[in-house]
Length: 164
Length: 326
Length: 102
Image (cartoon, rainbow over all chains, first blue to last red; front, side):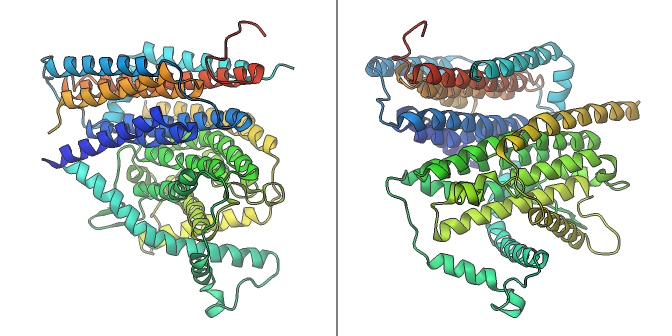
């Protein structure tokens, strides 16, 4: 086994193991804390895939901001109600079956399909290439995303604001 | 896959070496803090352990090591214990991209990542998670309030820090810290970007939760905030994380604005250390001269003053960079 | 050497975990966490395809960045909704949020 393979399996194990904790833990704070290793594992996979810029953004946004936001919401709400509530609904068995079927289907598709091998190589300085692409070929998507960001920011403030 | 091993080696090396170096630097920092505060208040400060009290922090650390690790009743043990690891680790990871000096074979840096500045912003944002976990895990309302305040504060002040980092990256045309230092060969960026430097300094003080932004651990309101319930070595680890983060912020400010290792006559590493400790002195000076803000004043200050000013600064900088390239 | 299909399998498993959380959790915050896992799974796919199928185009990484941005929007609005629901209904369990008007 090469070094890359060892690192890959390690990262996959961390990601999926933490993912299982996120999904199954009866304590919602533990679930939220387990999101951190799950996101960091995904970050490691990005680094393996030569996507350093995406990896940096992943840590900054997911591990640094979204997890904090989720923990914040839990502490503001569960702080009042406590952790006593039942966490799973009646669909647990059916849900597990559906999720397993979905996983099986996706894995079969992923393994059986003959994916086309790519030609060309990644540019040597990916952050630069991403910036060029965002302000060149993909300018419309870039601007659209920024409008969505602005609107959702305003929406979040409007929704969460106390009416008085 | 050579680069992968480089990254792994850099990470492991950083953690091992910096656990040792940062430990010494932090011990010295704590002593410095006590001496400077004493000097500003016309006291003498620690004086009896070692020559001029130099070994005071060593003695304190040994004392903390021997103390009992108290876990509060009905605390969330797993979260309580792991928060202690997250805070110093996140602070130590910052040091991977900081160039300390230069030798004939190249700059002294653990890893010159091509996303260096972004990496710094990303790792320093991880500290908040540890603080929130500590606040929740302690099963204490003061700790929880301290943790929540800290989350609000750090998330707010990350934005001006990020914008200041982007401004400098724009000037240098690169996210790599080594390229940024090299870009300051003729002129330090503090001259070209005084506004960004001030914003970075203010936001850095807020980010490491020091006076006047220490709402998180305001003694008179919240006991010691999120680490009220921690004792013994765990308390020491939080202190290590906090001072480690402060040194990292100061080192990054030196790299971005004060020309990093650059300077005449003296060796580069020495220049870096001199600048670093000058900034640390400023942090301490501020701490012992200013009163504490109120939480709403502090959040308003960031959202209504710092962020608009830094956005404006960024736009103006971008304009001049484009004009200069024409 | 792990190839494209290795990454796709990891991503499929992560997606299924997220789906399971979305379908079975009662706590709305936990449902949001499931959605985040699913978005992450999609991003692994995008970045993996970028490397193995079309390395020179960078479209996969660009798309992953946009997905991350939209995930941040989604989290902000979603959690604002959770807080609003908690304030009016005093619960964040999705099966108890069952009135149209309060």
